[in-house]
Amino acid sequence: MKVSILDSTLRDGAQAEGISFSVEDKLKILELLDDHGVDYIEAGNPGSNPKDLEFFARAKGIVLKHARLAAFGSTRRRDCSAESDDNVQSLLQADTPVIVIFGKSWDFHVTEIIRTSLQENLNMISDTVAFFKGRGKEVVYDAEHFFDGYKNNPEYAVESLRAAVAGGADALVLCDTNGGTFPSEVAQIVRTVEASFAVPLGIHAHNDCGMAVANSVMAVENGARHVQGTYIGFGERCGNANLSTIIANLGVKREFECLPDGQYRNITRVARHIAAISNVALNERDPFVGNCAFAHKGGMHIDGVNKAAHSFEHIDPDLVGGQRRFLMSEVSGRRMILEKIWEVDASISKDDAVTDSIIKRLKEMEHEGYQFEGAESTFELVIRKQLGKYRPFFELEHFKIIGEQPTNGAYGSSAIIKVKVDGTDEITAAEGDGPVHALDCALRRALDKFYPELSNVHLTDYKVRVINGKDATAAKVRVLLQSTDGDAVWTTVGVSTDIIEASWIALVDSIEYKLLKLEEAKCPK
Image 1 (cartoon, rainbow, N blue to C red):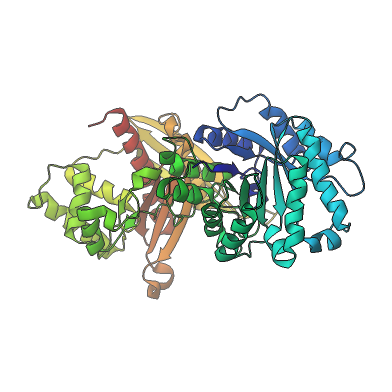
Image 2 (cartoon, rainbow, N blue to C red):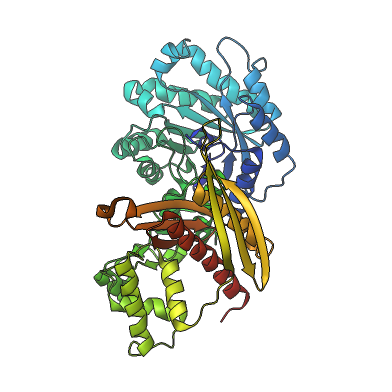
């Protein structure tokens, strides 16, 4: 059964704290979601800011393959016609095939927020919807604060929907605008309202109580056939319903059609791309798409997954483009180490001397302060070095870090670095927000002429932990670096009494791991 998906990342998502899309960012996400097969992409309010006006102007030149582009705005103002309302006219000028109109369904908001009569509010809804229907637009009506309105005055809340239907609305979306409704309430209200209308019902949930996904799924199971949200869940306050989770639940674990065939395996890839474009760290514990979603640590669990994965994983990770991961730790066992060795060289036996040498080396490194849980990339490089299946992609000649505090009080750092690649020296310098950032920038700049493929790689997380705090400022530190190229995510680790050296070790491993994977992709085994 078909469930239409409306992604509001470019509008609701842009209202999240710390998010600031450029027009280029919005155009990239537009094309990404269209390729993914999302039905509707709500891209902003052209009457609210010049950036959205520019976006809609440029979007006219893009031919979408699947999605229908939507502009978002409110009903006409009180006591005026739709034709004379500036916001309504700006929506028309956006020239999108779909218009999403929001209006008031809570009588309290009608009288106390927009300060008009209950009848005039109904007129505002029907007039605005009819205005756009008369101009050939598909109109989705968002009933703002519907669940609060229904709980306080169900008759009026339903009457506001009837006003939208009278204007010709193509879909009625029930909004949990403040995110305070419980799934049991959503189920009962959606079931009751759905029985009263022939027009398809939708759900728009916010996550203020942590139940936006549950509320959205519950709405669909009780008759809703249109779901709104943002792809990785960010939005105002605690965020919007996470569409990657909803789509996976409905389309993979249930038999609802949310995406075209073949696109469910791209859910993780699309989530990571949107996170990269948005310059946010994807929550690694997000269901389905997070790096931890199919990660196993305990030795008994790992053994069980190897014997019967379905008994420890609720779905096959491949169905959503995920990857099963076995985490290295003190509870992983010898079998876990063998599994990792076999990923590099399947011919190695558990009784081979090299197996014992690898285990010995790992124990030595753990004693030095290394921890490989969540840093499997460094672990793989250690195995390759022990097996003789490693070559350095560059050599460090030297680097120098300069820290300074200029008169404006903003502390900054500069790094000078010299590396050698296949006998060719390259020296460069870069500035950064701190010594590690400056070193990272300088190294990438030096390697760019040799390995331009690194241009899309960037750090997404940086963690420092003091290992032996009793040694005070002489203590060892462990640095974990998480990197991404927009598709894959990998983590590396470095240990030293010098935080810069520990960071450098992890940084080199991160870059060499990526270059190794690129080399393998070009010359598969």
